[in-house]
Image 1 (cartoon, rainbow, N blue to C red):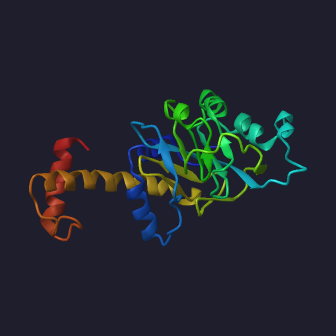
Image 2: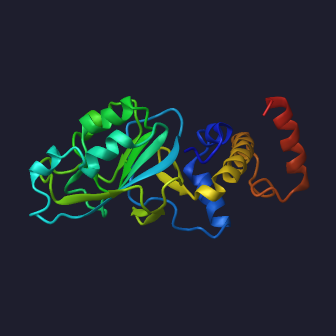
Image 3: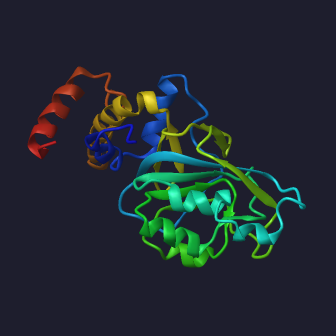
Length: 239
C-alpha cells in the first residue's frame, strides 16, 4: 500500500539525498542515510519507493545448505516474487558482502515486476551486468562469486538495519548518485514538499553564485533582498 501520494513521489524524484538529510537533521534525525552503500549505474532521476525489507542472519550450515534455494518459500526468492511494484527491496546483509544479496537474474526479475529498486548493505554477484540494467541498485561492493550460503535470509517485511540506518516497512527510500536516505513514513509526505521547495531555492542560489554573487546574505537568505530576488526569479522561470 502506498504511503505517499503520486505528487509527493514525483517531487522526491527531483530532490537530492543531501537536501533530504539536511531536512532530517532539522527534525533531529541523524541516522537515516544508509552508510557505505553506492549506486551501480547512472539514472536520470532519483530512486523513490516504499521499503519492503528482507533480514538475514549468519547462516547455520545444517539449516542453510545450497539445496535451500530449491524451496519456493525460501525468503530471498519469495521476497523477489512478492515485493510490490513501486516498492524498493531493502536487504539487511549485516554490512557483509561476502555472500551476495542477489545477482543479475534476481534483480532482472525485480525490474520486470515493476519494483522501483534494490538496496543492500552487502553486495551483489554479477555487478558489471547489474550496472548495465536500467534499474536502480545499491550495494557496498561486489560479492565473492561462490560464498552463497554464508547468509541465511530469515524473514520479510520487518524492521531492519541497513548500513546502520533503521528501516521500517513502508518507509520511503530516496536514492541518487551519492547514496540512499530513509524517510520515516509518517513525515515523508511533508518532507517531499519541503525538499522540493528547498531544491528550487538552491537552484536559484547556484545560478546567482555562478553569476559571481557572494554567498553572504544569499545562502542562507539573511538579506531581505534575497527573498525579493528569488520571488522574481521564480516567476520568470515559472517555478
